[in-house]
Image (cartoon, rainbow, N blue to C red; front, top):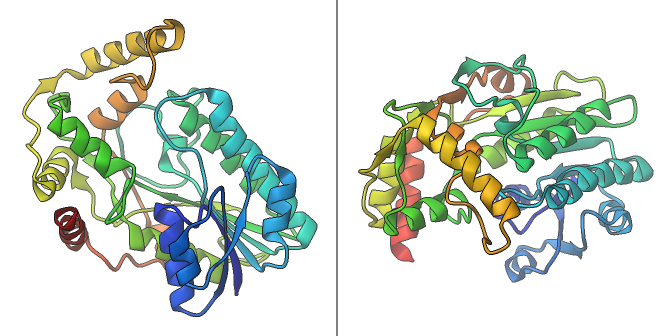
Length: 330
C-alpha cells in the first residue's frame, strides 16, 4: 500500500502513520510544517495547506489510499477558519483523489456530527444529523462527512470513521485542557448526573483506520458508510476525568454547577466573546462544552466490528496506565 496521511504529524495521524510503517507500507504525510520524527520513520513529507488545491493535488499524486485525518478542531473560533480547513480542505482531497485515480479514501469524522445536545445511549449509525449545531467544528465536520459519503461511487470508495474522545500518550487536546483547568481551579462538574461517554485509546482509533482501508474498495460493504469507533466500554465521565487528573498529579474535580446554568453561561459568554472587542481568546464556557459534559454520549460499534473487522485491543484501564506513565515521565 502507498498511503497518504493528511495530518500525519498530529496525534491520531501520527498513530496511523506508525501503524502503517510498522507493517511495511509506504507513507507520505501531508502537513503544514516538517516533523523530524517522520523523517526518522522513513516517511515522505509533503508540505502545504489543505485549503489550496494545488498543494493537495501534489501530495496525493501516485498514492493508492488516502487517510484524511487533518482537521481544525476546537470548541471556539471563526466559522470561516473551520470551514476553510474542514470543508474546503476535504473538497480538495476529494478533487485530488479523482484527478489522480485514487480508489480508496478513509475520512476521520467525529460523533459530534450527530450529537444534538441530548443524551445518546447505544445509538447506531442511523442517528440523523441534527438541524442545528452548537459549534463550528461539528457543523463543518458534518458538511465534510456528507461530501465524503456522497463522493462514493464507481471510481472512488469512501468511508467515514467517527472515533470518540481519543486519549492516550501524546494527546495535545483533551488531556492537557482538562489538567490545566483543574490546576487553575476552573474545572467544575456540569449537572448532578454522572453521564456515560465513549472513549477511544489512540492506537485503537488508528487501527480502525487501517481496518477500514483494508476492507474498503469499490462496491464493498464499508463503501459510502459512516462508522462509530470507540473502545466499546463506555465510562462514567467524571470518574474517568478524575482518574486522568490523578495520573497527572492534579487535584480532582470537587465543584459543581447545574447544567442549565452552564448552558446559560455558555450562551452569554459566546455572545460576549464574539461582540466585545476587549475580550479575546476562548470563552471559559460554551453551549457545546456544557452539552458534552452534562449528557451521555456512547454508541453501538457493532457495525464497525462486522464490516471493518475492528477489534479494540487496548482497554481503557491499560490506556490510562500508559497515559499515566507518559504524564509522570514529563
